[in-house]
Length: 121
Picture (tube, one colour):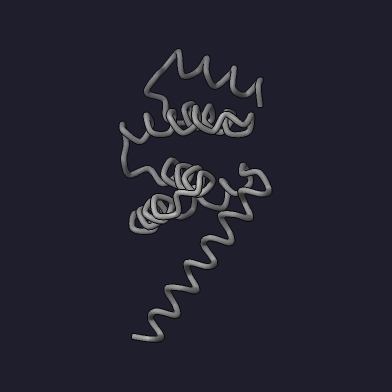
């Protein structure tokens, strides 16, 4: 992760608007345990393009990790509304095991809650 971070940081320095480099940099920061720095970098990338599912999904995980369930839910809803959920599976490979389980459990419980509410209606 430190080598990837150094490379991604260099790429961001060369082209600050390169979203792929920003995401790679944020992923490396996350892997190194620098969650706050990753969060800030993703927010910056999101400010340039607020409809990017890969950024929103990563931010959702970070919000869930911090215990901000409502914020995480809102970000996940936005990913679903955009319709580009193809980013979720590759992102799961980046997440640490405990965070992958957190995301899977959270999404599973929310899905069950939605289904239960629809049955009651």
